[in-house]
Structure formats: C-alpha cells, structure tokens
Image 1 (cartoon, rainbow, N blue to C red):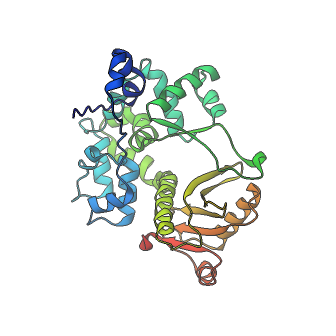
Image 2 (cartoon, helix red, strand yellow):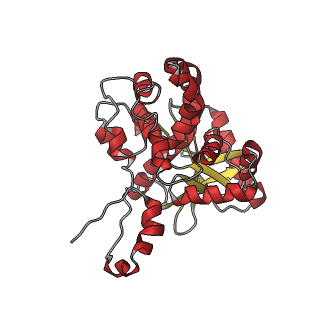
Image 3 (tube, one colour):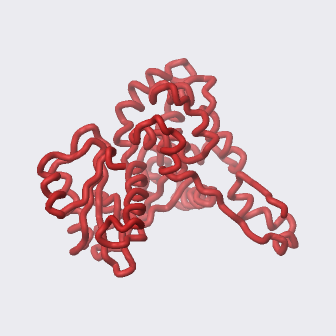
Length: 323
C-alpha cells in the first residue's frame, strides 16, 4: 500500500488527477483528515479549564502542530503575545505563508479576509467594504471555499424565510479567523514592538464577543453527545444555526421526525437572566418555529429565574461547569 499525504486541499481535489489522468484508476480511497474534536482538546490539555480549552481551540483550531506550540505553563495573554504579537512570533507569518502557496493576488484576498475578520459576513457588506465588484468577490470567495478557508453559512430551514438572512460567509479556519480579526489589521504596531498594547487594547476587551460562535460550535458538539447517550427528549442528529435579520439562534437541532430543539449561547462574563430566555422565544417566533424544546448555554451560569424554569422542565441549561 502506498499512502500519499498533501496539505493542499485545492491540489488534491482539482489538480492532482490532471497531472496523470491514468493515476485516478489506482486510487482506492481519499480521506480528508479532520481537526481534533473538542473532547480530544480537553484530553490534550488535562490541566486547563474548559473555558481555557474553548479559547485555545477558537484561536488555534484543531491542528496538532499549532496546539503543540501553546505553552501549557503560561496563561492566555502571554501565549497569544508569544505566538502572534512579536516580530519573531512563530505564527505571525504562518497564515499568509499557507495562503501564498495556493493563491495569486494575495493582497486582494487579504482585503476580503480582513473584512470577514471584522464580522462583515454578507456579500453586500463585502462589496461595500472592499470596493470590488460582486463578480470578483464571488470568484475569490469560491476559491477560498475550495481551500476550506471560507465557508458559506446555510441557515436552518424555517417557515418564515422572509426573516432569514442569506448570502452569508465566514472564515472557517480558526487560526486564519483569529489572524485576520486581530493580527493582520495591527501588523504595523506589532512590528513596532507594541504587541502587548495590541492585546490589551484590541484583543482582550473583544475576546468574549469574538468567541461566541466558537462557543456555539462546542455547545452543539456537547448536545450531540448528550443526544447520542439519550440525555435529551429526542434523538437529535442534525445541527444547524438560524441566521435571522434581528438575531441568531445558535443551535437548531432536528431529529428524524422533525422534532426541534433551539438554543442560544452566551460567552459573556455576566450570568444569563430571564431576558436570555425571552430573546430565544422571540427569535423562534420570528423564525416561525411554533413548537420546539429550548436550551440555554452560558459561560458563567444562570440566575434563579432561569434555574426555576430549568427545574420545571421548560428549558435545558448548561454552563461550563457542566461540560
């Protein structure tokens, strides 16, 4: 048996066979290696809290090479500065180096990725921010999707489609997402030796908000495990997100009989209150979801009103201590 490995998804899927068409008949299988799961992340960092593991995964993704660079003896701030925010940092040039192997016109792609890193995920927002034509943006986005750098966000199917946002994209690679959100836009200050200031002024204050969608990914993984072990009211197996014009339902789970569970996730420092539950119910109404189970996830727990609803079976709740 001959095993061939490549770090270039674009090459394997689009170019490898073209080099030797007869080679295709010799291929018995292609396996796409996935990033390690969050459960495996926790095993990788046995002495780190769940919160720290979520943050590390959100910054470095699930690639062992990058995870091995995280100094387990140091804290979050020091690790981020050492890995990204000094002129000699090992990851300060890594994202661009990876992209440069695959892409021409890297500066144009950087412009789009910076906009995505700023949270401009609608195609029209990218058009306004970059000044590029919609046709040009679409071509660049298509190329980035083929490289698994960007993904198109498909919203959960709901009744009130008029309240659903469409044409949404995000950077799917965690390392690239963090890089284009915080590192690349501040590269001049970093090169001037002001990486600590960049962390204190730009990264630290924005981190909780930035981490919400990554926390939601972990929450979906948690619910999927709970469902597999029969800990939920139904055996949910399909997980999505609903992107509404007035808010996002982070978790929309369905089973084979179209039973649904809907939830939102908060990674803020404050505890979640009854307003969080009211927001979730309002969003499900906007989506046209008339019947579903509810769940709430919160980094720092819930107030007594939410706990009472949970005890009454009206909502499933989980904080980091439950993971």
